[in-house]
Image 1 (spheres, one colour):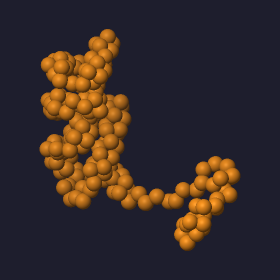
Image 2 (tube, rainbow, N blue to C red):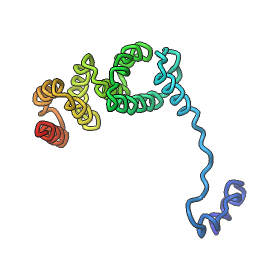
Image 3 (tube, rainbow, N blue to C red):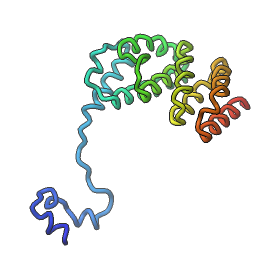
Image 4 (cartoon, rainbow, N blue to C red):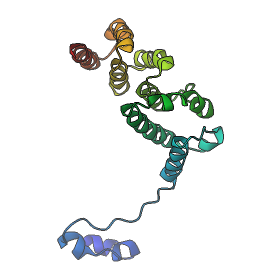
Length: 190
């Protein structure tokens, strides 16, 4: 009662069907969301997937979250392609995308992380050193553990990743060190 009296002049409060909200079944209807930013990402993703090589102008004015979403979509796509034995098709385009969008040179850890996960999902040997370097530099489990896990998926990369981990193990947080060590032990037992 106080709430309704206090906000009686607010049209948004007057338009709420309180009976339905409090006593009705199910969730109330949600307003239609504006997804313009995500739609731009989906459009570019579809274009890249279809063979478009990319251009710097494509991402001008983008928020980092849009680039992160694009890379997440590309990682999922690369994993699908790799499972179908077509990782080469995506891997061959990584350098072109990096040139167009400055992905190898980014200083944003979130974008760099996703970019390197994409490269590892495509079995790109040219970016293994960059993935190991990020795992050594950043050290946060949020980035370190998934990077090491991706590196462990190929025996040639695993030995290099393990050597780097052993070298830096003492610099990581104890929980990060413990969890990554368990991941290596599990991968080696397979």
